Image (cartoon, rainbow, N blue to C red; front, side, top):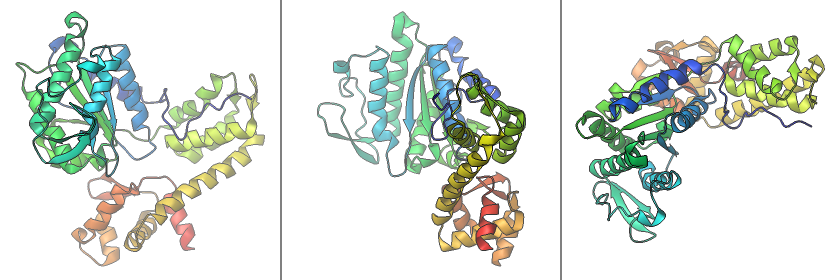
Length: 388
């Protein structure tokens, strides 16, 4: 049996329909090749879970390294973890992998970089011992990034392109650490006399826009790029292209059903494709027909129900009441915050805490000013069915 080409639980190397976003982000990077100084701002992709932010960011990272010669550093943030703790070691590994630095040459103390000031305490295997404690500050992190970016630019007899720092799941970065990072990025960007070529790029849930602008004024100078649902034409390509690359095609009527069911949501498209492929077990030259569709739809609906149940189970009693009110008011359409508050008999600011909590749990998102929407298509229908 041919391998299944769909990837519902991991990134895709070919995010269909994202060419414009990728081009826009890369246009923000390439001026550094001429200026040889830091970019004037950063780039943050934002969107709901499963929309393809990480896939886009990974393509940009690969292009930046292969096409433009940048050294790239990738950090994936997580709750209750410290990005600043991980950063020195991740930079070290990136410089060693790029053959810019030998393992024995790494010592922050010898490089004159002082991280032993500030308020973010952690453990790291840098410096003299395997468990040397350090605390990070704006000045210490700035020294580290300046030094690393300069090393990258000087590599290859001064022909290196510079350093790009990618932070995924940016919304999960602690507010204190994000404030340090954004202030560091601003300091480097503002120093046009001696700043090395450096840029920051990130991705996060829609709430990251407010988080970043609250953390530092640099957030206001950042390009915030939304990653939205795919249009029907791109959704069709996203389903068909992986199959065609293995010599398999999918009947038009099957594609029509799956494109409509997924509603432009990339995670659902990949999930439908995965289950359709597993049901059809195609061989090269085969056409996947309607005979495989019913079982694939049923399996995918079971997967989606599990996801919906996990989201609903993660909500507190008050959050569930909020979710039910949203579903009753607008189903899957955006709902006014004031209408939700009225359903609770409260002023708009009276629902702020539960709203923020649901946004942090990626159950709802701020669709536009004053409106909220569920992050997963079909979730409202699930909630209303549960009530009935």
